[in-house]
Image (cartoon, rainbow, N blue to C red; front, top):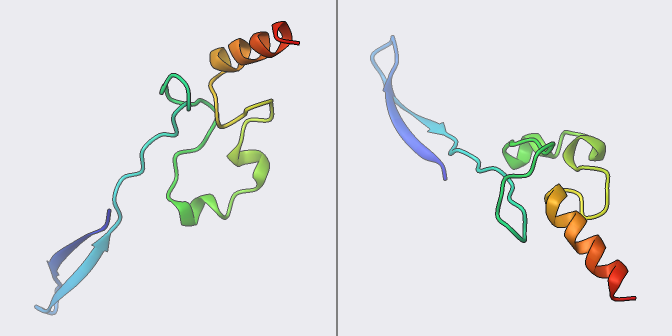
Length: 80
């Protein structure tokens, strides 16, 4: 969420400065814990990064945490 603040300049003018809101950490879809290895950036800064820096390169990377990924893989293996 953006916030507009009024700021007085040295020339004694009142101007508005747009301040960006804070960005929350990305969360695991299953257990809601914070995901490691994923940068916490505003979307415009995130778009400038390469794909390898935005995601974790494993199955369900940047969607599930490591523990939930292990559980999901075990469930799939035993349900075959």
